[in-house]
Length: 254
Ligand code: MF3
Ligand code: CO
Image 1 (cartoon, rainbow, N blue to C red):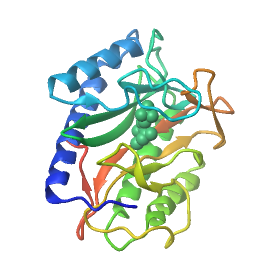
Image 2: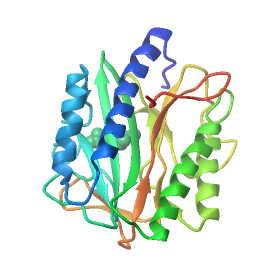
Image 3: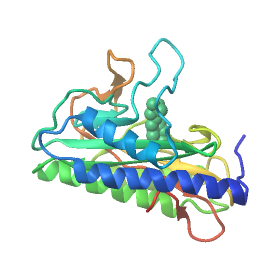
């Protein structure tokens, strides 16, 4: 079932989302050649805790045999699509890193992600990042009451593919609020005019994951890190959105 949030719930979700956005802005300032993803993770967790929140991904279970997620953030470099586990890897010139942050506060979740450049990146990677971010905003434009979920999906897919890139099929955006992952699923591909109807008071995370090459992905030996099968880079941008009768409201802003 898709939850319609009350005013009070929306206030709590917005509060968590604001901390998510602030954490991402903070991390962006720290991304540079020579820093490790573990250091970024620590900076993020300290910030979240000092604002009365919890890092929502830590301890998250995806079921099956993989370990519970062991870090505060996801840090996914180049061919890593999402769910990269922070560690001792040192950022190098020319890499792109996707940072994904979730916060739980007052019992409500916020979720967002962005991709940033480390030093000087290739034109191709720059275009990949720009197209992915633009596709998120085109998806957000469709996130209004009385539209269908796949209006968002189609907007993302059409733009990405027109630019020669591919959208990941195996992972999707999602409802968010009372739980990190709620209904509806928000795919980044699909047919306009289909899927559940959007209603005022729904809160959803839209998160295009865009590959420079083919869309196929697989999960690494660590049970979490999703990588492209062809080894080519991938970018990821995400916002938590409130559906209303007017303009979509981006909650993960600060
Ligand atoms: N934004 C991602 C998602 O919605 C992050 C989840 S990481 C996890 O799936 F560890 F919580 F799974
Ligand atoms: Co998400």
